[in-house]
Length: 321
Image (cartoon, rainbow, N blue to C red; front, side, top):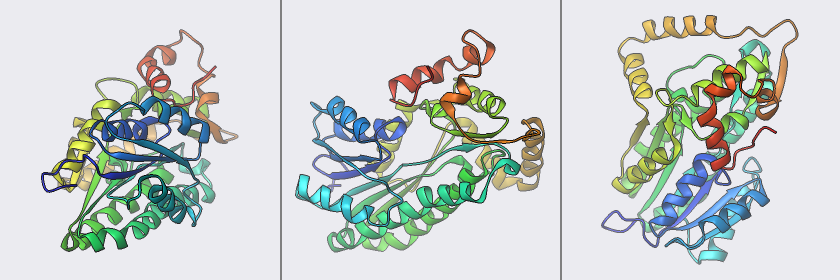
């Protein structure tokens, strides 16, 4: 960013930007005049989003890439230089994977997948952009963690474990990189209406897990509008903010856990007991669109998740037939 803290003319790389929050952050950056490189695995989705974002003040390009590939950082930085003739000024590590279900229905590979995508891939990208940022004495890194990276939410343990690691990594980077003029913003969102419930994977009793998760991610008093979240994240980058906690419930949970961790732990235990059991024959890796299809149109879950389904369509998340 320039001396005034603006983003005009800066070069940004946003991961997980073919849909959901990443798409919205990329749009906000393009509106502010950033040159934005989109990246995700979905090549067709990236092309669609790049077309949608054309005509904004900032230039937008896209490169399909699997972030868990160790060669991904070199590929992405080369694509940024080839397209924009510049190094990355702003890195937004946003790509994620949500796996919902009791720990007894999870497998070791679930935790490995979560850590590879949400801890190790961001680390490798940070290591790749650091040399040029240190040489310039400037740069911004944004880590999209979660309130689940501070509060161990039940039935989300692969996600929680990876986000706890990402939060620690982000805060540690903020301390170590500040002397080099590199600012690190740790973002801890609560539930947002991105529509990502259809992109999640469900284990145990998948239909029942989908019901509670999708409902919580859709209700306006519990979840936050994703467009508003994206705007607040970009403003936090502009101001150089070190940490941003999104949603009143997330702020209250973080405060309560810091003041009374034992009490918070007991409440989380109560929540875990109220959630579905794994079932006699636990399911595993059920896509959100399939879990959603188990709830009839016009039924209670369908009605309660109306805002979430609208967000899925608006933000290019998978949609149930």
